[in-house]
Image (cartoon, rainbow, N blue to C red; front, top):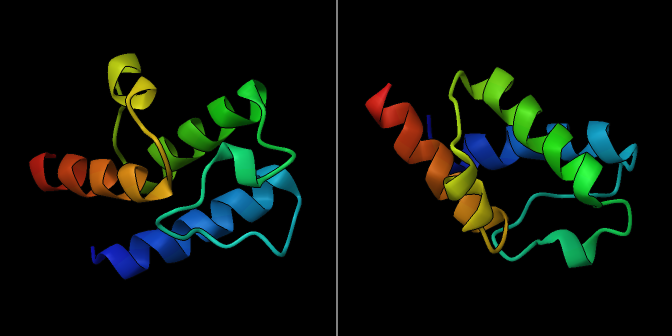
Length: 82
């Protein structure tokens, strides 16, 4: 799956979780950029991504993410090894 496709699918996830049709997954997007992105919704994003992309994340992997670009890179690595 291409990075562009991951961004496209993450955009769908973010719009659904935050109930905000204007959110777009970009490499620099982070929780500070989306008012609805609290710890509860962070978990919802991670769980939705696991289901959508068929991967599992370790807590240490999630804690190290700084932005959506990092998340896309992690998803791509996980999909390559699964």
